[in-house]
Amino acid sequence: MTSPADLIDVPKTALQLGGAFATAGHELHLVGGTVRDALRGRLTDGDGADLDFATDARPDDILALVKPLATGTWTTGMAFGTVGARIGDRACEITTFRADRYDRITRNPDVVYGDSLVDDLRRRDFTMNAMALSVTGDRAFADPFGGIADLARGVLRTPAAPEESFADDPLRMLRAARFVSTLGVSISADVDQAMREMAEQLQRITAERVQAELTKLLLGAQPRRGVEVLVDAGLADVVLPEVSALRMAADEHGQHKDVYAHTLQVLDQAIALEDGGPDLVLRWAALLHDIGKPATREFLSGGRVSFHHHEVVGKRLARARLKELRYSKQLIEDVSALVFLHLRFYGYQDSDWTDSAVRRYVTDAGALLPRLHKLVRSDCTTRNRRKAAALQHAYDELERRIAELREREQLDAIRPDLDGNEIMAVLGIPPGPQVGRAWQLLKQLRMERGPLDRNEAITELRRWWDQQPGATTE
Image (tube, rainbow, N blue to C red; front, side, top):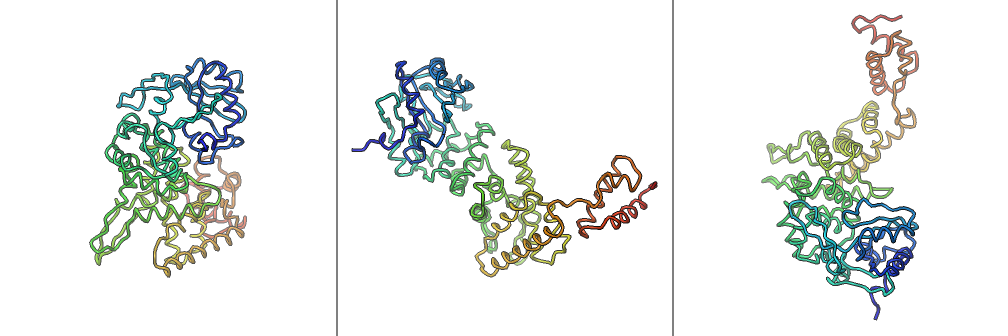
């Protein structure tokens, strides 16, 4: 009968480490996601993926054993029993068996080293991450909590009772949602129930740790399913309340669609338009593009509903939430800009835009224009085929005009027809705020009228300058 161990292509690095630990009389086991991914056929000897190990050796002994084999080591996790080492093309983390106790106020354990592999596996998040393979010669496979069966069924269960597991570390609830997205698994009924009852405990988790899990969830293969777990279990009420708020009840006439369901569809459609791998900025923008609607909903006569200026409110809410989650300034600016701009196109559909309006659309989007194209196209979720076709045709036409103007006018780098030095030379003024105002004037003219020849630009600049109080030209 085939053993699970026979299904795992053990990396040479692991066998090399195993030999060193065996010689010293210690156990060494591949553990966690390393074993899980190997059993899923996602870990091979030549892929360079990181490796996780557990051992009965104490941290100082681990460090002494790996140093002769490693091109580099790191000890930032030694207080928690973990030593890191770069061996060949692999980053390896080796951790002493743990039997931690948690205060259940923070998520920081009182670190207690153990001597039992089974006890170490019991404290892990899910059964499919609580399997181990010895690499010290005997290739013994340990699966005390039925992880391989759960992996085969695609079900998340916890080694200990889920209430105990989540009380020890509430972050595991977010990991459950993340694994639904990244691994395509489902959640067992008892784990789901515990998440619903304990969601508020996520308040103990730092924003940085929450951000890391949400990023992995959104970059997964099925982020929609992960978001659904967050919302259904009440986790989003704590970490993404703006998304939970999208589940607005329809008005009494049933005149507007479920904004939450629409958002999930937009997320799916945006992902389908990605052309260079997962795009975190685009996915966040799709998820947050309508979060201004709950605060701006207004019931009108005839059963109509409006969300006037929801893109303005949405930009502010997106910026605040992503800042709270400690995202980078660049990501915050990019996502909030896309949220703000996502409605601009509908003015094009409703009226004929001048070339000036098209230039402004491109200039305001800047480097985000390709993402804005994807977001706007994804925002069409109507079941009315005629309306959907009209929207797509209108955006096709806008993109055609953008391409035409880009070819004709270097649209991606719209700048005034005179630079700062030329402005100072024409007006005979030194550097200062007046130069900046003149530059803005010429840029505005460039936006409105397209490229001007040099003489025309100088004429317009002097006309403007003559109207400025106290202006004199040399």
